[in-house]
Image 1 (cartoon, rainbow, N blue to C red):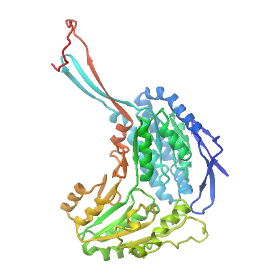
Image 2: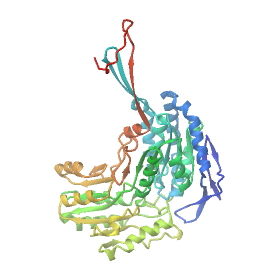
Image 3: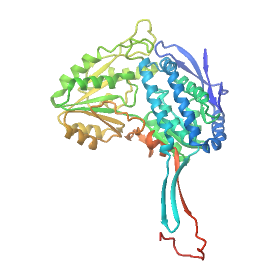
Image 4: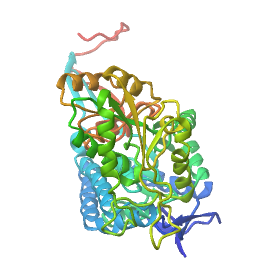
Amino acid sequence: MKHIGHWIGGKGADGTSGRNGPVYNPATGAQAAEVAFASEGEVDQAVAAAKAALADWASSSLATRTAVLFRFRELLNAHRDEIASLITAEHGKVHSDALGELARGIEIVEVACGIPQLLKGELSTQVSSRIDVSAIRQPVGVVAGITPFNFPAMVPMWMFPLAIACGNTFVLKPSEKDPSPALRIAELLAEAGLPDGVFNVVNGDKTAVDRLLTHPDVKAVSFVGSTPIAQYVHATGTQHGKRVQALGGAKNHMLVLPDADLDAAADAAVSAAYGSAGERCMAVSAVVAVGATGDELVEKIRERAAKIRIGPGDDPASEMGPLITKQHRDKVASYVEGAAAQGAEVVLDGTGFTVDGHADGHWIGISLLDKVDTGSDAYRDEIFGPVLVVVRTESYDDGVRLINESPWGNGTAIFTRDGGAARRFQLEAEAGMVGVNVPIPVPVGYHSFGGWKDSLFGDHHIYGEEGVRFYTRAKVVTTRWPDPSDSGVDLGFPTSR
């Protein structure tokens, strides 16, 4: 059986803890590999390698760093299909979706290639007689990334390209459910000329996470995952003196007004709810139908959703693949199985879906729940699967109130032809990312990604200029070049004169 280890100090490491975890092919349900779970000592080795590489890398020129990143970008483009196939094999998403994930990650690499512009400082001359003040940004040090299973290539690339471009060194702890893409990325970084130790990968479980959160040489931690774990990561990391950005869960609402183009809204709802089998933190999981739109909108969604082709991710005919594990599949199914008892109308029930020849795969079909009560489990919880709930409201104000009462504030969207309503919504909706007739408003790489409320713990969003600020520390330098005629002692308070 394939054994997946770590990447420490510029080379692969098999793992010495004796603890391993299974890696499954979600389409077949069969174990495809085992992944080593790092001990605290192995995490220490990775951090030590990053620390040893820090001084030289932090003092390297911006031209040196960007040259590596430009070469890395070209290698990613050359190996797109290979990396996408690794994602499909271990995550289960269809190949085209895996390619899309990789394209989004490459977008952040391209932003990092422009780091000289993003790291430009500030200068104020003659703030006082012959005194200048400048502001510069310097790397934080050794930083860590802890990333989820649903985007095993993209989310790490939301972090490490900017981090290393800013002069930091990096330790990545990817999900143990689909670890191979991270290790292949490490190999490509080495091939691009990244010095040994600048980028390291340790696989594992809570033991590895806790050691990164408490290690005295780790100065900052980036995390993406569920809200409970995000809260834990933020609390533990900050308690140990670290800078932390922890992105949590979501329950993204899509508000559909009576004047909306219902065909466009239905297309968007189906795409955003069921893409990647709903295993996206930016998936639309709740449609809020305002006024008389509900019946027609639900029927249009039903018609489209029923036609989605579900099958193995490596089959070009498949539009949606399996869920990551059997346990997660069963949890998602439980929300549909209990929906009617909690007042919902089950329009589509995907819990009995199977794929011929793949009976043991982690399969679930499309589910659509209408007239869902806001006190029900299907509405309140982050399901993270192909289950779309529809809530009915009488007015725009009621819809916005529902959205703002949600404990999460990752993303939201409005579908309308009314520019005034759209403008109100973008100002009134309590979420970090808002779409107007755009169902998944994930920002481009030169803006920043992040939510509000229980969707983000910490002060910084991820990537873009926010990412640069997170991975650097500000320093202000006040300089005086005295004139030869200057002399004398002055014990008065300094003034700008």
